[in-house]
Length: 618
Image (cartoon, rainbow, N blue to C red):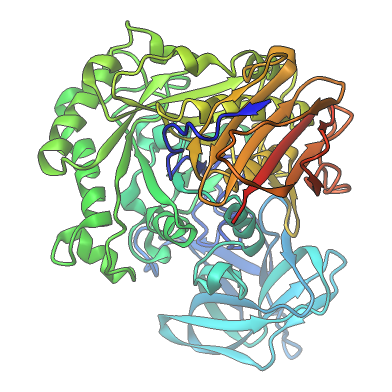
């Protein structure tokens, strides 16, 4: 194989490999958002969802702590029984957490907080219990609630054992009546110690992907099953206690699936900043999910939808003298987020979408001409379909989504070679090997996605970026497969698909160079797929051998390209295509690194993803 390293072409875009986060499969509440209490404000359709109780306990809504979330719970521990032997029943409420339970680790710190009020000075207890009712964490000193006004209380708990299904118990032990609201439990060790922050191990796994852009928060949750259920970014402004939550679009198949907006747009912008990724928020376009009720806002009601788009740009980029720039500063970030991309709609399509997209275009370009709009153009070669009205609107970026079977990804690694070049960029906003007979993670799917990704790289003069979907799934709540990262209350599993994404993203710097071979091509001839880059330090060759037998390669380089004597090789391989990683065997399929001299042929195992690094001589 000849590497034409002296004929570099266009550079792979800096923001090529990104991530897409949608609150599906318990990805946000009960997942990336580190809150451990389910239904902390008692606002689910069933206000007792996630909770149990004992004694004289009731849900109330008179004189609430927060007007957007009016429900709270009252515990009454007055003396009862016949004279003279009256007693107290010590009522309590307990929370079992989200789908996988409340996971806590031995000797780590957890911060429990709540708002409370009482007519008297009343003692309470805060504990963590095991499923066997053993107390595994308790307060270090007595705690009393006192005063008729709502007040925030916080205590620290340190479990004596690691427990994946702990219960959080809030008990009134003194005589009196106590109201509680917004009951919360967070690990002290959140990502970058952010208050109201993210789960550490999941964020680290995301960080290791080195994403260069972040598309959020969906996905179908942006559209909603009807327009009332659509994602509205302004609902996530202000303090978490005051944010107006709502049922999740995916809740039809997952009971008690709620969006608290604890992980709101502001947090997503912060996440992008922490990751060094360009933010790409997606807004509702005036249409609900066309696979559900397919509601369409009348044109005369579109002003508020368009204004939301103008306002989020001001929120992200405006000075602190502007209305929403000031709100951003009050939330803790006076500096702008430098928003460049804005998506209008998710998977909306047809004349109604095109008509509404034009309203957004006209308004946004008149106020913010530098913002690049992302518009959905369909999936599977719709970019080439001249009947697609998106062509006439000429947005800066067209978005295509690909959910197909493994064989389709193998067969279409060269599909972008024939896409028209008309000055409009293409974005692959969602993709994964996904078909009716293979809706699970497997090495076959990872291999097929890697083959397809080489085609995306080779056509990165057209394609500006890509993001796998979905990213996260709680093992006890998922409604969609496959996913990149699975997790429960304490652990995570990185799939072979994750390792492919990481291998490609961590080797995504340089200019494209061509590869030539008499026996193979780079699009699937002889089941080989390839792309190559050169930068100031090395030549990176990505080779996917989708054949069952090993292949031996000798590499040739132009005479003016001087190389070090050894090549570094990272390989992801498994002999069984249906194999995957599990909680029981999380490292079943992981990359393996080796080095060898250039004097010997490079052997690529059958069914393998390979990254070869040829270091340039100093």
